[in-house]
Amino acid sequence: MNQNSNYIVAVEIGSSKIKGAVGKVDPSGILTVKGIEEEHQHPNHVRHGCVQNVKEVANELNRVITKLNNYISPAKISAVYLGVGGRSMKSTPANLQMALADDTEVTHEMVESLLSRAAVIEANTERLAVEPVEFRINGKGKSDEPVGELAHDLAVTVNVVSCRTQLLRNLKLSVSEKLNLPINGYIVRPMALADLVLISEERRCGTMLVDCGAETTTVAIYKGARMHYLATIPLGSRHITRDLMSINPLEERAEEIKRTIGDAHPDEAHRSSLPEEIDNSKINNIVIARASEIIANITAQIGYAKMSASDLPGGIVIVGGGAMLKGFAEALAQSTGMNVRRGSLPATVRLAGNKISTSEDLDVISLLYYLSRQPHVSPCTVKPEPPKPADNSDHSDNSDNSEFYDDFDDDDQDSDPIEELPKDSIWVRIKQKFGNITSPASLDDDDFTD
Image (cartoon, rainbow, N blue to C red; front, side, top):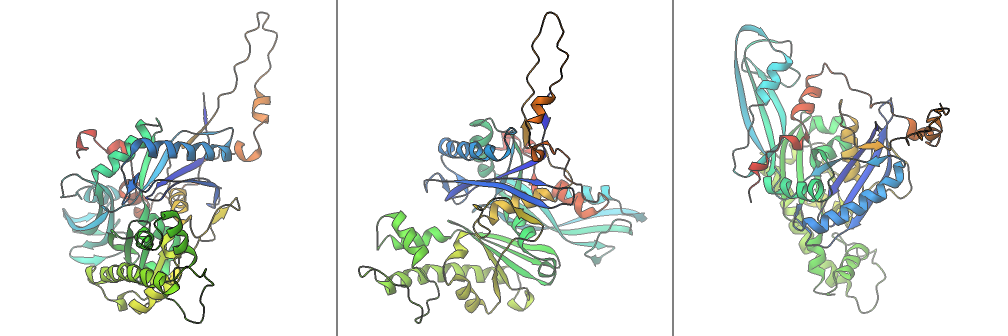
């Protein structure tokens, strides 16, 4: 029988590239990222986070999986977790209430039953996560765990995170059906990124997380350690690249110009040395115009969340490839009047290889980090079965298969399970049942309608 290893595998299928990552968690809870691989893809294969060409995406993902297998040999990847983002993702507030008998003690089961009532209202939309914002006991607000309290009325305000059913359907077609690779679950990428890059004080006092992607920009606002708002803007860094194609019609060259020359907040004292045929001012006028549009949409989300800049003393944390644009952080800070910093890895994440970029790979690392903090994670890899001994007629060979296992290095032999978090916390139970991981087994194929 195959032996399950304790590797975790996560995949991010984005508009510009497909990334995969494999990691391992030691008994102390430290995540080690073993390797990250990526495949750049044609712009039309994935649009705004939704797969358009399932065949090509499957081929590109297969190449990523093949390369990731080299980091864990002789084990092989047998299943993956998928990050979910994209244009259709949003959060919708909802209020849930449960009447109890007088002086009833609130239990974990009561809380879970209450949260299970949260549902999406829009047609062709799938629930991904239910994020509690505030519990109320007998009409009084309570942000901590309500378990153990005596109550006759239990209520909660939640944010229901959802996306189009079509998005999940196309992911399933590309991964499960084309590659015959099981999907262990879906992870809400913006929430996983927040877990990775926001410190507890930022989540408590109020902070806006901005994920700048190729075709979308996602904004998540945290206050009181809870996610209060989530929205996706259909604008990203690729829009800047396409604007620059007015200067050079080749997209690859326009992308290079954006990365090496473009500046969303140019400083006259620090001009790049440019070939004579390239007009610096023309480039930056194009970059500034589109970057300003993206920034204006980011700033507007604060008002849509019914907050002001003063409600977010933690400022803005930016991640994603688009956030690497020169001058973007400075322009965002100037527009909002808020402090802006780039997200970084916590000390509990270790990188095993020099190829991994701490700035550009945060998205897929965040998926591994989220998995590493869950009490239960389904196996993602298997080790090959040992060869069966030859059937000798004299039955004189009584040797076991120890030599086969001697070929494994110490790291591969380690099959200790991921250390479990305390199980008596209601937030752990909520995350496990209603949090960022959605099991594909809960998705009914009959619901998949275009």
